Length: 172
Image (tube, rainbow, N blue to C red; front, side, top):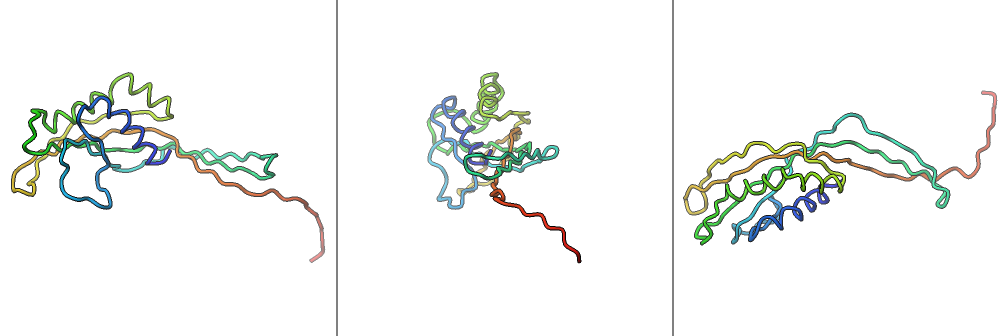
């Protein structure tokens, strides 16, 4: 699976359970200002290759070529954090949003849903709650947690087959 497929699956699963909270990717190439609504932000921490790749070659009769497939088990760690803009009338805090997302990801429904997509959630870590100084010199919470997704990274390539082969043994 690609990062885009993983992020899309997670986002689409979280959105119905987080009312009035946007779910977006953090660290976009272009960021303009702070979000105007409550948001859950996600970004990838890293990938860990698990074991050795499984490789397979299959001859495709119709197209007359070899299809080479390389499948690698991967553990991708993703971090979710939240921002709750000041002045919101909603008493929900950024920590409440992050806790709600963690609760959603730890349900049996989430496990079943992600398994049907070829993914698995291995674990959800503890929720951290560091503070930072915002653009108005106020201390604002930036709660977050990490979770690990198990999936298969598949690479495919093709190689045309040889039409003829002529064996010659010659003296050197």
